[in-house]
Image (cartoon, rainbow, N blue to C red; front, side):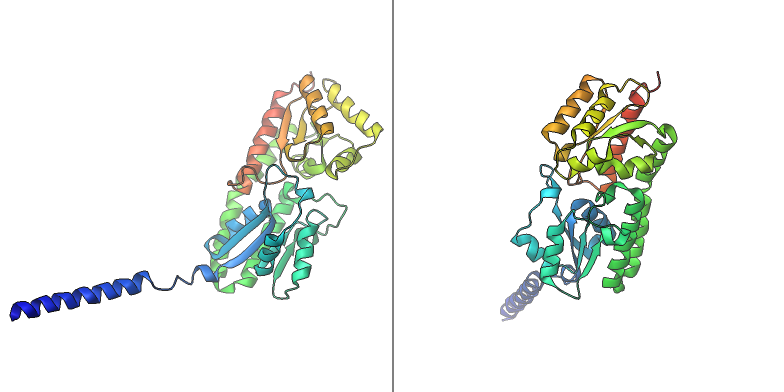
Length: 310
């Protein structure tokens, strides 16, 4: 009899443990993921920065990131529209760079949705050079605005965002230091660029960007430069050994055309170092500051390798 009671007790205990285990493993998912701020960045350079700010309290989707596509020509789709409609926070570049995103935001018309238009933040408009992420000052202003917007959306985690903001600023230190180092070593050095993507970084590094402005703007906008501008640009490359002409060619690898490839080949033929840059973060799995720092290292090496002034 006692043995029967003992077996029954053991069976009851097993049943209790099994029931408890079932309840544990089948319990509803943690609410942590459902409370994350849903963020959409039109491009991955802004997406990388806001992702580092938001950390575990945000879920960030960057739409434009394809290394083989020209972001200027991006066409949105239904998935993009759904993502933007569901987002609590949307970041766009503005100034005509991603009008497709602005149209989706307008169609959604959600008054509770926070939208950061970087061009508006910086006082820029369509027609201005839209490559704001190549300016360290503009990056700093945008990061601060992202931080402020995240705090306004999710005040309960304000302290966390403050820690993330401090950490991101510290992490951007190497990128900013290298810009200052290039400026100190090579200020005034004449360089060329196939597009206006390099204008802001040339200003920050105090390099002398001698390429015709209208040439760079035309190529960036997908138009043909004028013949006089093209002749002048090529002269600055072909006669690069003469004082005052280009010592480095900055080449946008993501928006290459037959014209820019021809100019690149001329630069190689005349021993002008080439520095490749891209519109979006490449490779896509690294941080904004690591991408930028890698391009700056290439720029610094190219400037150092050219025997300017001989």
